Amino acid sequence: MPIDQTDRQLLILLTENARAPVAELGRKLGLSRTTVQSRIERLERRGVIGGYTARLSEDYEKGQVKAHILITAVTKLAAKVEAELRRIPEVRTLHSVSGHFDMIAVVVAPSIGELDALIDRIGALDGVERTMSSIILSTRIER
Image 1 (spheres, one colour):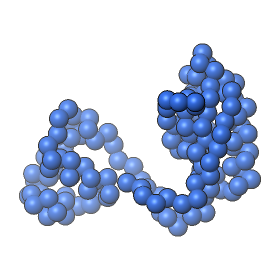
Image 2 (image 1 turned 30 degrees about the horizontal axis):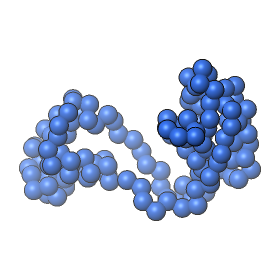
Image 3 (image 1 turned 90 degrees about the horizontal axis):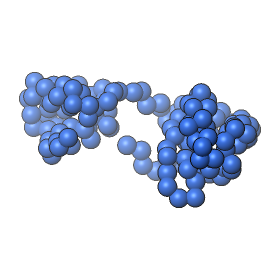
Image 4 (image 1 turned 180 degrees about the horizontal axis):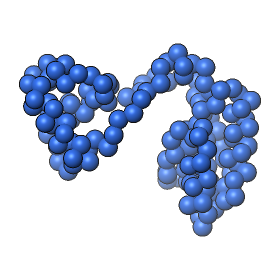
């Protein structure tokens, strides 16, 4: 689905603030409000924009402990591991990756102790061969 440079700029602005008024987006792009609205609708229809979500505030997130958990799964049980990880609400994102590990789960917990228990829980899932974790100390860029 090719998109033009204006659509790319619009997507960047929406990524920064999906609740920005259409008139404000138009001013930033040098377009009319109706043109911006029709572009957004077209991007939604084409599936380029798949939805909108809430981003949690920094103040709320400061109290949370985030980590990346790298997971190696038994090949035949990878789909089962994924299904089990979907059921764990602390798993925010799950990536399939190449390399020594099969998946990377981005998780969040209210404390180090609860993060430790979560890592143990994930490591004990049927089909998980091993895990390796890295606690996120700070986020430098988030788009």
